[in-house]
Length: 173
Image (cartoon, helix red, strand yellow):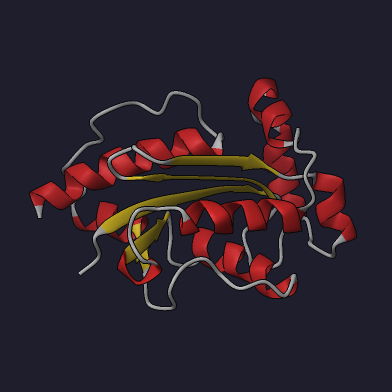
């Protein structure tokens, strides 16, 4: 059984592995440990990560402040991924005891895993530690979120909101 739950959220320029990741947000469910890193859009394109036209159209219709924040990164993807790896490594339990949650079995974790793979880096989570927040929400649709998301489309704020909601959902189970 996992001893520590970590919620991961990404802001991206696509919906499939191989797309540009604009920011990484993560937190433990108790909110004691938090991580936030924006990533250079241009450096990501140079590294071979892709944009999807539908996602770029979606970004064009978002709040300008959220868009500005999402596209403000200056770190190259490799540096951001190494920073996240180091953050995960500094959590107070061994990697094997961490469950990493994403909002969709087909989104956050696979997209970030593809980034690590493409850049030839090891992943900071164990192969069987992935969990799906979207599935958890679907199983308990009658349980509403305990708080409102402060700033939508900010990876850390989204991770915090999702972790708080997941905690409530898991208590119901």
